[in-house]
Length: 285
Image 1 (cartoon, rainbow, N blue to C red):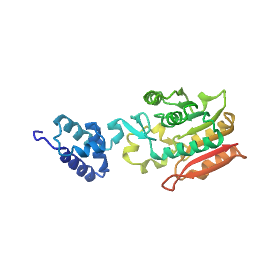
Image 2 (image 1 turned 90 degrees about the horizontal axis):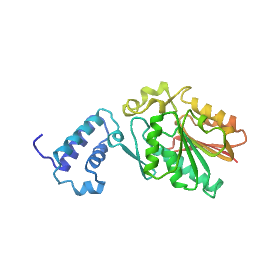
Image 3 (image 1 turned 60 degrees about the vertical axis):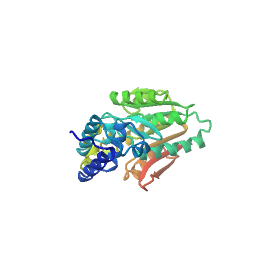
Image 4 (image 1 turned 120 degrees about the vertical axis):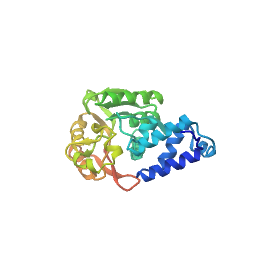
C-alpha cells in the first residue's frame, strides 16, 4: 500500500466494509481508537490527520478479522465493565452489560442486610473476575473469594485483580467444592446456562470464539443452578443472599430450584433493562 490514508478515510472504509459483512459499524471506531490509543474525542479531533502506514495495516487486519467473526474484545484485549477496564481473551467470557445489573441489585441488598458494608462474598464461576473484583472495589471492607474450574480463566482473573488493586482469594475447583468448610454471607454466580440445543442460535462471534465450558450446561442449561441450589444451604449464612444471573427463559425454573432449597426465603426474579428475566435472588433472612 503506497497511498497514505487519512484517519477519516480509514474509518469510512472500515465502517462500510463491516456493514457489508453484516457486522456492527461501530466496531470500526472502537478498533481505530484502540490502534491509535485515543479516546473518542481524540479520534474526532484527528480525523484529517494522516494515518501511519503500519498502524493502517494493523487496523485493516483487525477489521478483516472482526468481519470473519473474531470479537472486537479479543482484538483489543479489553472490555469495560462497571466503569473499569478488564482484560479478556479466549479463556473467559466477554463481560456483558446485563451482569452490571446483578452487581447493582446486590449492592442495594448489601445496604439493607449488611449496612456495615463488610459481608463475606464468593463468586462462583468467576471467569475474568468481573463480579468478584467489582464487588471488592465497591465494598473494600468485604472479604471476597472467587472460584473457577478453569486454571487459565483464574490466571486472567488474577491479572485483572492486580490491575484494580483488588485483594481476592482465588480458588481453583468445581462450583462449591473449593469454598466448603465455612459459611458465606453472599454467593453470586453467572454460570454456564445455555442449553446445548441452543448452540445454533448463537452468533458466530460467541459460538466460535468464547469458551464453551463457560457457555453451555446440561438439562437445558439448568444443571449448575440445580447443583448449587442443593449445595448452598450448607454454605450460606443467615441472613444470606444468593444472586444468580440466568437466561431469559429460566426465571421460574431457577426460582423453583431455590424455593425447594429455601422454602422460607424471599425469592424473586428480576428483569434487566431490556425487560427480560435476567436475575434470581434468594434472601434468607
